[in-house]
Amino acid sequence: MLNFGSIIICPQNEGVFGRIFMRTLQWDHQKNELVMIDQRLLPGEFKLVNCKNHAEVASAISEMVVRGAPAIGVAAAFGIALAAINSKTGDLEALKNELRDASRTLQSSRPTAVNLAWALKRLMEKYDTFSGSADNLRGFLIAEACRMAEEDVEINRRMAEHGARLIDDGDTIIHHCNTGALAAVDWGTALGVIRMAHEQGKNVHVLVDETRPRLQGARLTAWELQQYGIPYEIITDNMAGYFLRSGQVKKVFFGADRITANGDVANKIGTYMLSLAAFDNQVPAYTTAPISTIDLSLASGEQIPIEERSPSEVLDISYQGQQVTPTGAHARNPAFDVTPHRLITGIITEKGVIYPPYIQNLASTLQK
Ligand code: MRU
Image 1 (tube, helix red, strand yellow):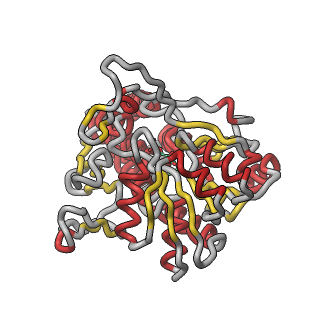
Image 2 (spheres, protein in one colour; image 1 turned 120 degrees about the vertical axis):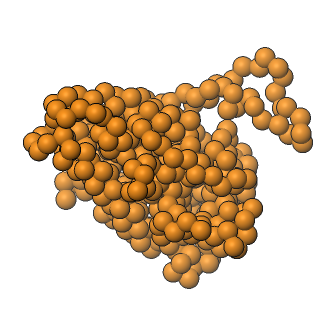
Image 3 (cartoon, protein in one colour; image 1 turned 180 degrees about the horizontal axis):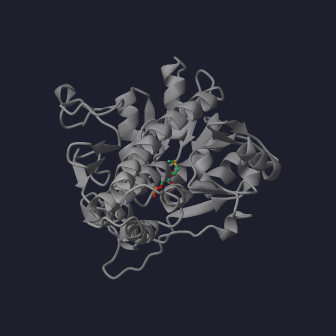
């Protein structure tokens, strides 16, 4: 049994004796390696991946071994710690240059979630002004990355507490993508809110958008909800409008990869259509995100870079054992879309719930 962290993850194929206590990301202090749950394989297989250097972390992020905005931010921070440890130089300025190179490599691994850039910038500000020895800086960066991981858990817990107040006993909620413990170090964003409401004793029922093309909802959110004992049913993404229109849904919850100064929200592809359907049926749609997801440097959502991933993620799918698409078919695969702020009822953060007008209230909340 691994006894690393606070969340309990029970692999389906290992039963009750296979209970594993582990966070999505964990620093191995003995080996100086970053250990992460391989999210590509869940729920079928529970496997850990060890990253020994920053290039391995960058490729784990781009291949989505680790995914979710807060999780990739913290993973990138550990990537910088690994770059420092693996550097052989004793010269402080040379080490800083190597860290800047590593930062560029990590930054290019995924473009949309601003948490990645936020984490790298936070560390860069620290090492740029660091004046001890190169070895001191190595120790400092490991400690700082561990601190960021702990902060992430605490921030998510606070978001969950604020957000849980919005959930009423008996609510049926549509949830998009995976925003749970797997998308952060622990707890997660929108799913953390739902988990908190459940732990407070409220009866909640979750309709889980399967979230094509990579099925983070059907694979990861359903798996997490099972661990927490929260009742759920998986729906295909195109069923959400039906359930909203027929009055069966009280709230819609999702996360965010980047929120601009006016409150526009970039999140997993499909969030925009879901929010439109919620708005048309007067069902509140909440996004949950840490302050580190808010990017006041961008005025509105059109400026957010949208990652376009390989068409194979859309095309390589089978139905009843048969490949669905014709050989040689073409596809498009934008991984995120932007939901305009007018469709967002509230933004749940660790500092409380922010309501419109976002242009004023986001800026004032960040200043607090
Ligand atoms: O492509 P992914 O799986 O990294 O996308 C994740 C999402 O879009 C989440 O909803 C988002 O990161 C915010 S919640 C952690």
